[in-house]
Structures are given as C-alpha cells and as structure tokens.
Image (cartoon, rainbow, N blue to C red; front, side, top):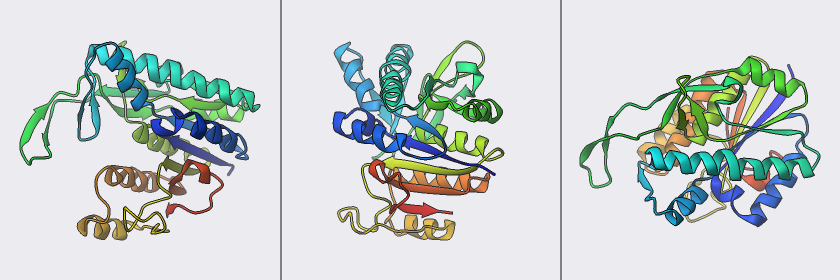
Length: 265
C-alpha cells in the first residue's frame, strides 16, 4: 500500500512570514503523496476586529454567528488557503485549495446547543452558531485527486448539504481526512504546533515525551501533565489510530522529516 502524509498546521504557522516560508519549503520536500490541512484563527480574529465584529471563544472553540461566518469564509477559504496554494506552486507542488464544500469532500452538521462547563466551574448552554461537526469525508474523491498528482490544501470549512458553510475545527478535519484515506493509503498524520512535541514539563522544550499509548494518555491527563488544548489533540490522534491511521506525530512544523516529536501508534 502506498504511503501518504496528512499534515495539519495551525494559524500561528501559516500567518507568520518566516514560519510560513519554512513550512512551504519543508512540505514541498516531503516525498510521496501528501495533504495539507490548515487553520487561520488569528487572522480571522484580527480581520473581524477591524470590521467591528467581536470574537467569542468557548472551550477554545470560536462561536460563529452569521457575520463571523462571513469573516472565516473569507480568511480560511480565501486569504490563507490561496496564499498557501500560491506558495506551494512556487515550489513546483501542484496544490489545489479546497473547503469541505468543494466536490463535496466533507459533509457536516450544525453543532447542537450544548451545556459546557466554564472556567469558573459554572455550567451554561452554548449555541456555537455556524459550527460544524463532521459526518463524512469522501476518501475516494480525495484519493482520486492524490493519485492524479494533486496535493489538496484543505481549509477548516465544511458544509451541511443544504447550502450552508460551517466553521469546523482544523484538527478534527485533519483526523477525519486521515481516517478516510486509511482505506487507500498507509497514512501518517502529523499535527504541527509551536512546541517540539507533547511535553512532560510545559516550560521545558527538552522534556518531549517520545511515545504515548492510550494507557499513558489516561495517566498523563489524570496527573495533569497533559491538559488544555493538548487533550482534544490527543483524543483526535487515538481516534485516528483506532480507525486505521498507521501513525500520528505531534511536533513542530520544521520537523516534518519525521525526526523528533511525540509518536502515537
């Protein structure tokens, strides 16, 4: 079975000129089949503010009303996505920018109102607005594109099949895309962020935990070593492994060569 790399990069990487240049170079040098999934939240927040639109976040998730949906569509599907595509073309990578609505690759449903526990311990019913939870990914269509030499560059937007775009978490999209491709390729899923891996000590970049099993994960969360946004990232990783993804790596974007980072197998 042929191999493929599914790489997810956060907005902090693609929105900074220096880190973006490094990412484009490193990603273009990856051999074989590949897919890039990106964020862009910082740019969305900045542009929304310039338009007088307030950004609201709950549990690290953006509440997306109609005006914010317009902003994230412009930023994720336009500005960030097309800058990445143009940059990769300059490196000879035949990139194709996509949202989940394009060729119907990712269908989702609007997240229902849910009760969340806030930082102060109180519970509140939250309507996330136009936020989507993934129902299905067309792995066959993505596989066909990849086999034709196309490199999909996927923005964190999906659709509900009823004409509505939905803002969808990029980590979740990367995990779901990797799972959908697992029937066609041996998949390595890499989550890139600002740290060199999952750290035993958040203040010590040399304290990378090289391997984490599901048993380790439960122990690390109970002890408080793994907390915050790393918990859903690892939950996505183990979900991907259970659905056929060969390996998940959590690392810095400048370590796409597979050296270092935290490996989940």
